[in-house]
Amino acid sequence: MQLPSLARAPSPDLRLPLVVALVLAVAGALVALPPLLGGALVAGAIVAAAIVIRPRWGFYLLLLSIPVQDLGAAGELTLTNVLFGLTVVAWLAHRAAAREVAPLPRSPVGPCFVIFVAALALSLIVAREFAPAIAALFQWGKALIVYFLALDLLRTRRQALAAVAALLLAGAAEATLGLGQYVLGVGPESFAIGAQFSRAFGSFGRPNSYAGYLEMILPLGLATTVWLWGERRPLAGIKATSDERRTVLTNGQQWVPVARSRSSLILAAGATALIGAALLASFSRGAWLGTLGALAAMLFLAGPRGRGAALAGALTLALFAIVGGVALLPPIIRDRVESITEQGGGADVRTAYVTAENFAILERRAHWEAGLQMFASDRLLGVGLGNFNVRYSEFSVSPTFILSQGHAHNYYIHVAAEAGLIGLGAYLLLLAAIVLSGLHALRATAGRDPLAHALVVGGLGVVVAVAIHNLFENLHVLSLGIQLSTAWALFAVAGRGFIPQGDGTPAREGAEAEHAR
Image (cartoon, rainbow, N blue to C red; front, side):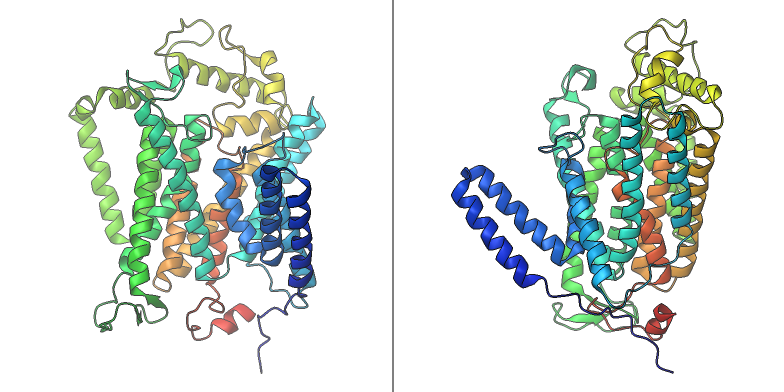
C-alpha cells in the first residue's frame, strides 16, 4: 500500500502581487516621504513581503529581535510584537491555503501549556486592574502560539540549526554589548563592581533579566558546539575524501560538509564563549546558580562519561568549599558567591536595619513575603494576573521597601500570588510535562541522531537553568517566552525525528513511513 506523501501542496503564487505592491510602496515612499522615514518604510515593506512568502524567515527574525524589541517601541507596539503578528498571520495563511497540511508533532506540553494559560485567564475574575492583566496574558499567549509555530516550522535539521544559529547570533551581539559595558564601567552607580567595572546589563536595562536571556541560549550553544566538534571529521573506520570541500559520510545516516562543519564549529564556539563571559560579567547570582545546575544536568544526561564528569566536578567544588577555597577568589566574585547563602536567612525584614551590603537581599525577601501574603489572601485564585504591582502596597511587610520592583523575585511565589493554587498547580504541571517530553526525546534520540540528541540535552539544560533562576527572578517577561517556547518545541520535533526532505540529506530508511503515520 502506498503511503500518503508528506509534501504539502504549493501555496498560491504570491510573488507577483507582492512584487507589484512592493514596487508601488517603494515609489510612493521615496517620492512622498523624507528620506529616513521613506527608507524605513521600504525596509519594512521588504521584510513584510519576505515573511508573507516564507513565514519561517519571520520566525528566525523573531528570535533575532528579542534583544532589540524596544527599538522604536510605542507601548505594546514593539518590533518583536510586530514581527510576531506578521509571522503568525503569514503562517496561518499558508496552512489555510495548503490543500494538504502536515500534522504538528505530538507532545504532552501543548495541552498542559493551554491549561496553564487558561488558569492564568481564570484569575482575571479577581483582578482589580485589567490593563496589566491583559498585558501579562498576552505575553503568555504569545509564548503559547510560538510553541505551536516552532513545532510546525522547525521540522528538518537545517531549520532547527538555523533557529539555534539565530539565537547564538543575537546572543553573541548582546554579549559583546554587555562585555563592553562591564569593561568601560558605563552602568549606573547601583551596578558598580569595584571602582572600575559595571555589571553587564545589555539592552535589557537590568543585569538579572540580561543574564536570564543569556542563560536561555548558553546550554544550546554548548550542546551545538559539542555536536559540531564530533562532526568535524568522519567516524573511525570511514575513510574521508582528500578534498574537505566534498561531503563525507560521518554517522551512517547523514551527510555533513566537513569544511563547513569546521567553520561552524569556530563560530558556534566563539559565540558560546562570548555568551558565557557576558553571563559572568552580569554578576547575577541566580543566573550563576542556574547555569551551574544546567551544566551539571547536561553532563549527567550526556551519558556515562558525562555522569562521571558531573560527579567529579561536584566533588571538586565541595572540596574547594570545605578547604576555604572561596577565599581565594577575587574579592568582587567572592562577595557575590558568599551572599548566595544569605538569601534565605538573616534578620526580619520588618525590623532589619538596611545597609548597602544587605539592601538587595532584604528587598528580595520583602517581595517574597508580600507575595506569600497575597497568596494567603485568596489561595484559590490569588490577586489576579498582572496585579502584583497593583496590590503590593496593601501586602508589603517592610516599612522600607514600599515600592514594588515588578514581581516577587521568585516566579513560583509570583504565580501563586497572582493566580493562586490553580495557577501554581498548572505551572508545575506544565514544567512536569516539559521535563517528561525532554526525557522521552532524550531516549528516542540516543544513538540515533547526534544532532537531535545534542539539542535535547541543551534544551533540558535551558529548562534546569530557568527553573533554578526563577527561584530568585521572574524570567517570563520581556518576550523571553519566545525563545523558551522554541527550546521546549525542539523536544517534540527532535524526539519524533527530523524530516529529511528539504534538508539536503538522504532520507533515512523508513523515515517517510514513520512521519506518514
